Length: 275
Ligand SMILES: Nc1ncnc2c1ncn2[C@@H]1O[C@H](COP(=O)(O)OP(=O)(O)OP(=O)(O)O)[C@@H](O)[C@H]1O
Ligand SMILES: [Mg+2]
Image 1 (cartoon, rainbow, N blue to C red):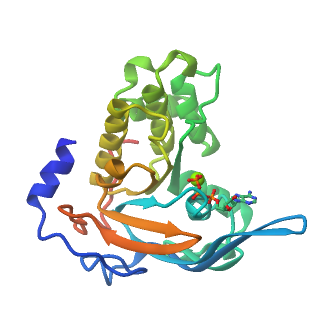
Image 2: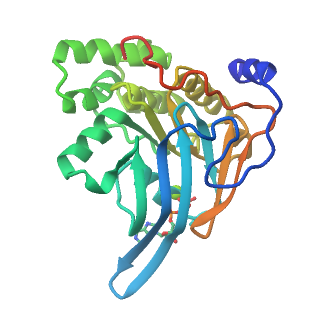
């Protein structure tokens, strides 16, 4: 976690808890990459309605690293799926990079998901009987990247997560932490500006959790916006902002003590090398 500590050491005074939706004084006034406005989500199952989100408003500025916490059923995954354009809200507005995603047709949305957003899930979701590098190549294939470049970029992404030496192993030949690192490599292979992770360390031991969080910290240092769901306070504390949900709405939204949101690398070309 040395990077975290370094940054905490060089940070200015930690800001106190701040009100939702515009979270942090450091970033206030900057244009958000994510802007949720009074988002509701009602699932309908036959005659039964389940309200998962009751009016969530949230701004996230480019370069933020934030954790979403809350009890089981509080709406975290529902919100994440909406952020990732995997699901649509029942009402409210979602602006991604200033664009109302409702206005995008399915093919444009698919492209946005592929190019701008990388997903990491608790259960890794690697394709079995397919090598790590082939798994990482998958989103690049969807993006139309040539086989040769695909391989080069996938290997680069695996290097980024310290897994180049396991590139040709099957998921079943990798430890849980290694599988999750392969999944992170797959999420970043297309060089997305936004990385969304739904309990990425939920199935990992503490060593692998630290490895994964170090990778997220590095991705964030390189300018990517990272939003992760976690149940673990010690994971949330490694981020710079914690948004808590309760019963489908934002209960609190605060910057974490000792950490500091960095606005400095916003708007830059934030590519990590060739990935
Ligand atoms: N596809 C669905 N159909 C019907 N109800 C759903 C669906 N997905 C989620 N829900 C309901 O919406 C509410 C919020 O669920 P969600 O998965 O967002 O919670 P969560 O905060 O991610 O919980 P957990 O920590 O257990 O993952 C819950 O009451 C859940 O049962
Ligand atoms: Mg969930």
